[in-house]
Length: 263
Image 1: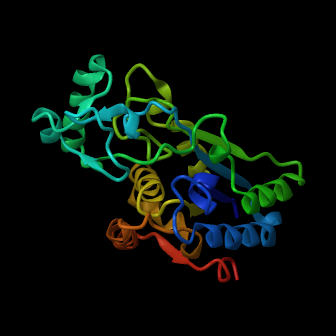
Image 2: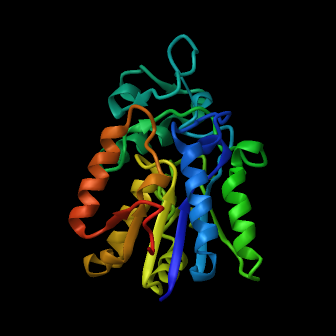
């Protein structure tokens, strides 16, 4: 059996309590996942790890936007097309205004999330971008078999959110990194079983799995299994996580606890 793991954004800013966007429960999720990876190291053919990777200036970070008084939005503020049209929020740099307006208009039509402002996180070259310690150790343990983890970066384009590891919310035609990651999809299609984990269940995990399922076709969704006790939703977005679980279970994805996987 070809067994592959896709671990989504297991980084300090999400999974360490000191992280700028800590997901409640993610620290213990990481310990459980690390234990699982070590237990089944000799059975795993490939491990893919996505890394959320941002600049300080990003369309979903506070510095990008300001109100009429010049104040930047608080974290978790949501910005709609109407907010931009009526002047509630404008871009800090005037030259960004039209492209940002086009962006929120597009989000309204493509069934992705409303633009959400997050604390600046997973900044390039900084501690928060690194893989959290328990999982990093488990990955090193697996690589001692002379294997190599496939690290997949996403999010460095400042003009679009990039929750899914497969494609950005609004792909940039001038930036291949935001477009459909056919290499990753084709590699995963070779697997007999794909185990998913990571952060956060409500956003990056949900969108990644949805996009993979959409590109695999419904007949292959049964290959997908979510390790349910190694992923958690962002606080306040639990409903999104439950909607995702209900949707994907109905399509054929399985869920299992880490202690029961391959038992």
